Every structure is written in structure tokens, then in C-alpha cells.
Amino acid sequence: MMTKRTSLRAACAALALCAAACGGDESDYETQTNPQYAAQAVSQLAAIGASVTAGSPDATSSGVMQLGNMAQVIITPVFEEQALRRPPALVPLVGDCACDASGCRFEGCADDDGSWTIDGSIDVSGDTYSFDVSMTQHYASDDVTIDSDLATWGEVTIGATVIDGQVSGEIDTEQVIEDDDGSIHVQGWYDWSIDVAEVGLDASRCAVSGSLDASVSAEAESGFQDADYSGSGTVAFGPACGDAVVVP
View 1 (tube, rainbow, N blue to C red):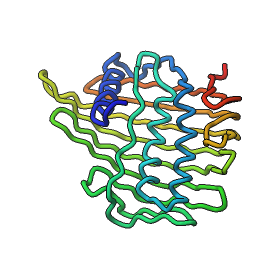
View 2: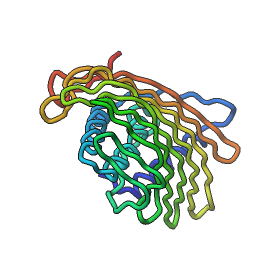
View 3: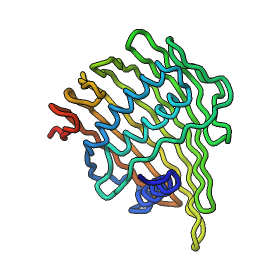
């Protein structure tokens, strides 16, 4: 598994490559669907439900933060090799952060080093989870700085044996990459959606039936260059845990 620093730099490099690949007002690229990450997205939704039930705002916020990243690696440009990013490590939270049987509420909730904050709520009614949260992230090293705004919304039924529903979001990011030749400034915009259609779960909460639709639309600008791509795909699961195939 890549470290958080390495995966963030990889994401920066891919976005910069997309912006620098060609100029003009539009640049469309063929996309591919990666079924292994679709299966992980189902597991991620199941884990979010378990985190809310356990009354854990830190685990819940960490899981929600990764949903957009999941969508981005389910649907990727064919020229891009992108590794799944590691969820942020759980750290003590500050601010108003609370989860109980009715859901989670975040108001100025943040990790104690100030690298991310979350606001909004996840409301729970029976097995139905309604998402309406926004986040900010900041990462800085000697050669990379990343500032991002994220939003996630939607409604998903997360039951003991089935997950069904839809969650969407958007990510706006500004990245600065420093190297021996100077600085590269990249602005990026992502819109994403994950639609889970009656996905059945086995006893280990692994997807064994149903399907997942994912879509991503991305645009990047760097200097006087810009590029964009968009794509969607469907992955079917089962009959055994680990079986995931792209639907033609």
C-alpha cells in the first residue's frame, strides 16, 4: 500500500499530466472501469454504516472522505495509473463531532493538526443514511501543497444483507508541485457519483450480487493548458465474494 504522501503526489502528477497533455478548450480521453475498486466502494459504504452505529465520528468522517477518491479510481483515463489512496489515519478530533443512533453531526469538526475539517450531517432512519457533508483538506511537504474542498450528498440504504442507493459529490483542488525547474500550479475539478443497485452482502459484508454504477467528470488547468475527461461504467458482483466484472 502506498503511503499517504506518495499517493497524494501520484494524484498530483496524474492531474498535472492531464492538464499538460494537450491544450485547447476540450480534450476527451477514453476511460476504463476498474471492478476491484467498485467492490471496495461497497465495503466502504458498509464500513461507514458500521462506524455510525458504533458512535465513532472519527471513523465515519474518515470513511466519507474516501468516497470521492473511490469514484476516481473506479473510472480512470486509460493513460493514467492511479493507486487507491490510503484513508487518513484516525486521530483525536476537536470541535463538535458526535454520532449516535440518529446519525452523525459535524460542526467545525477537525483533526487536531488542522489538516482537515468536516461540517454537516449524516441522518439515519432505520437502515437509510442521508449524507450532506462538506470537507476541507490541506497537505503540505517540501515539494507538494494541496488544498481541497469536498462535498458529499445522497441517500443509501445500508442493511445487514443489502446496500442500495446513490451518493454523489464534488472535489475542487488546488495543487502546487515544486521541482528543480520551478513550480507547477494545477487546479482541478471532479464531479462523481456512485449508484449501488441492490448489492447483496454475505456474512463478511462482501458484495455477492447486484451492481454498481460509477461516473466521474474531471477538468484540470495548469498554466495555459487545460484538459478534461468523463466516463461511466457498471460493475456486477457475485456469485462469490471477490467476483466483480465490468458490464459491457
